[in-house]
Image (cartoon, rainbow, N blue to C red; front, top):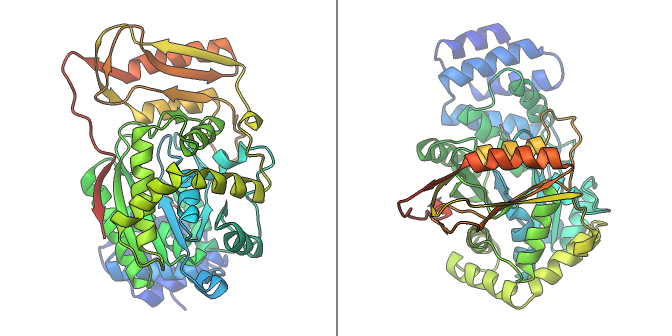
Length: 433
Ligand code: URA
């Protein structure tokens, strides 16, 4: 029997644990034999001392072993692909990428999470669609991927329960933002959910977990190594989260933005660029035998010919939702904000806008908060834009006039305008394979 206190002490002093020791700690905690306070101390030791690559892989494998796993190739007879984002503001990419990938003939199966704090969650966005069901069994999930080509559901409770328990503990002990702990947590879920090809979107900027490109690279490298260790094909895109992605922030507003983009009605350039590049990479990891460039071309083609929109509607219906645009909830107050002066947009804080959306009710502060699906922001300003006085900057969708007015005041402070032209930045900053 291991002595948890000795292992904590060794890690605290900068020593290394064996894979077996890590496994016993994690599984002991998951079964309730090792108390929360010892794992909390262990996480804090890891926060300061880090984990080696071997330890991080052992932690990931222990998470995976703690629950059941899916083997989607065995179920479907072909490679299924999945995409994951480390979380940002206005990030609705999966809602675009799922239908794009499926319309190109490749199965897309994703288990997803809810939003917390200033970042939104894919499940919350989907639940803004009346009737949409995210709580499906593994069998229903597999059947949807087989029949429709795309399914996005809530993470099944029997997958990686040890991570769930440990994450709750990290959340209240200031130990979430440790690169090896994040890498193991994310990759264990991706590995257990059974996709063979995975594109990881590691967000970088003030609205993301990773504030610097150097940290994002470290996280990406750690996750690539874990993917390789588990026999998965993984590509990491490091993408800009110093400004919100697309225009819409808030659940129903984001779903509406996705539908309009797929319908070719209104396309935010950054969301388009990220979605077709991520799709290209996913198709290159599938059984199609094409490269990422050809994959991106195919993504653009299914957008142009309407098949991505048709797949989107089929998918929403298959999960019980109403795909009609008028079915989405709308907020009673829509307040428009216009630019006062002429100039160039230098900065739009993603974190700040995420917090304003949270204030409006679009997000949750603690995991049990209810959210208001209808409210949010459409921020039209993008870094580098030239503005004229009176030009629309943002639209605030609120429950009442007072909260709309407060949000407008905050947004005006969050958009920095200068007299100097500002170079735009690409959405994909780096690609690591
Ligand atoms: N997302 C996860 O799933 N786990 C982490 O540790 C951080 C972000």
